[in-house]
View 1 (cartoon, rainbow, N blue to C red):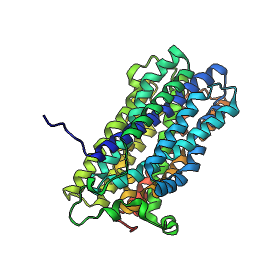
View 2: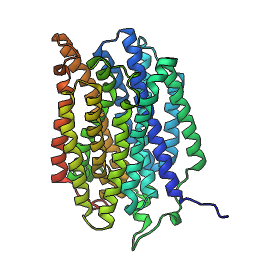
View 3: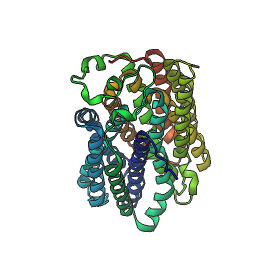
View 4: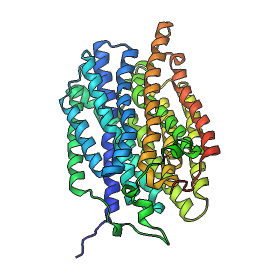
Length: 427
């Protein structure tokens, strides 16, 4: 009986899915564990925002260097190094809210390490995945983020309750070590024979990322389609990081709902992202391969639908005063933002397949800056509300927190409609 052998590129895509899943278990896990430890220690909201946003400073610094290094030595090696670095940091750093310096250094280091991951993944996938499979491959890979966030929201609050906040770090380090071993055993650089070639496509131009000599930095910086990707990446991550880092606080303090008592409902926003991300990828590839829409129009339609629907859900979020209502709004908002990733998040591989890691690094730097601004600004908004003698259980204390990303979604969708293209503009 013959054994079924998957094409190697499918194995690579699945490993990148697991990679992003583990990364987001770490990010959600730190938010949950630190929030529990900080609340027990009486840390104020502004200080919490500072610690929660520290990760993004390190993350921002390593995005473009990560893409450049991945172009030079290969994304496969950079991914392995990154995972080992952040896993070891989680394994050996104590979670003590009173040791602020230690936590800041640790979160910066984890941020730097994880900053290499997405540019490296896009460099790897640009080498392995042919154009007609890109939308669903990128969507599957990115949906690992949401699956990981959903799994973290479901399991880690109970782990904190049973074993304490530090136990989350141990679990994260273990998962990182397991993935590193799988990547070491099964990942490889692509032989040209593994990639299916359609028509007159050439693998060297599309997928020979490491053969290029000079990166056209000036053209990248001055390109309006690249700026459309950057603007939408910023908005997507502003909304995602604000909800990811502050929803636990909103449930606990804004609604007086315990995460431990919410059961599986608290994972629904991220599970919805997982589902809608893959739906978006399948729809995009179907529209393109059947020639129902051009690549340009496919990206614009999915991006616009996703971001506009998300904006209305974000505006409505603070109006709901029950945990179920907030979960519903957050699920709609994050689900349609994930659908929109079939627009802007794949677009850099349309316009610059040879420089996919570099362009991803540039746009993801903007997304990371959104994390720094959004997470820290939210803490300051809530602290200002307290100073104005507003109760954090009042909707007025949280309205601006959710309206800012809502208006950004509307603005970014118009930018993408006006400036983006699905045509290759960098040879």
